[in-house]
Length: 325
Ligand code: CP
Ligand code: NVA
Image (cartoon, rainbow, N blue to C red; front, side, top):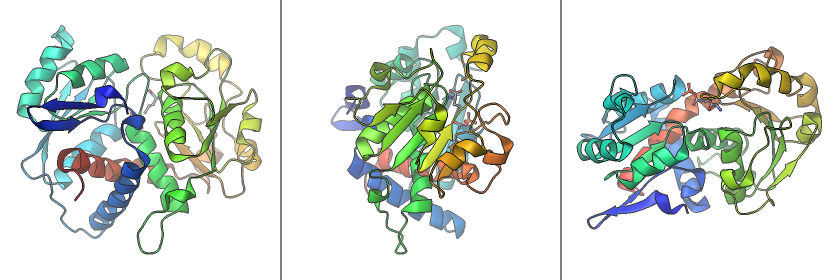
């Protein structure tokens, strides 16, 4: 576990969720089962209010649709409330130190979600926070998204009739990552080490994953392929992301040239297993990283994936604040 992820205030130990490897396999099993229950109750219009009188502060230094809506709607559904801050409408944009912001905000709320640039920034916030901090995306990681992606895979491949989850459905499976060696790719690698599957990585030259930034122990859980078609060979899941992540817009034109052959199309999906799923964290650019035929086709589960952000994050917020119920 990442040492930045555990801290104590007085006698109380607080857990942060700054990277995927801040939780272990057993905790993920609990979270997935809890998310399945929470989703079932949501679909049945059943009240689930464990976080009455609790407040979540959401801090956005980058744009968002899914993260904003899923955390905000999710917190209200848990009986709590939210405060929404951006760089532009808070003192964060006027250079108030991150440490001071953390000390102040965490005295008034119960939980903080941050979307920002460098991972070191969220770590600095967490180090001075009295309450749990959740990573809503940094340049390096996007753990809440992979939590939702894995839950979506499990729903399609490993949810038992009794509602229990079989994490074995992930063991030995192959996830093909086609595209940028970015925050999503790094997080997939952390997940593969913890949950026992393999990632086939294919990135254009110059955009490879850096194992030390990804924060994984070894190269045992991934293989690198020059040709994205080879990476997709026999995959159980094919996934990709935008060619240019937020914060890298100045590189857009160069990236468009470098990534031209890294578009997930029907041919790549045919190289994967016949029942392979397609995922994309969204927002997507049809005709760039994925063809319309694939993202809007029968193997795509991107809408389940987006919805599941809310269900898994509700389970996560409940767990960080209340532990196992
Ligand atoms: N996938 C995701 O995090 O989407 P947003 O940028 O819209 O929050
Ligand atoms: N890699 C993308 C993910 C967006 C949800 C980015 O960081 O912009």
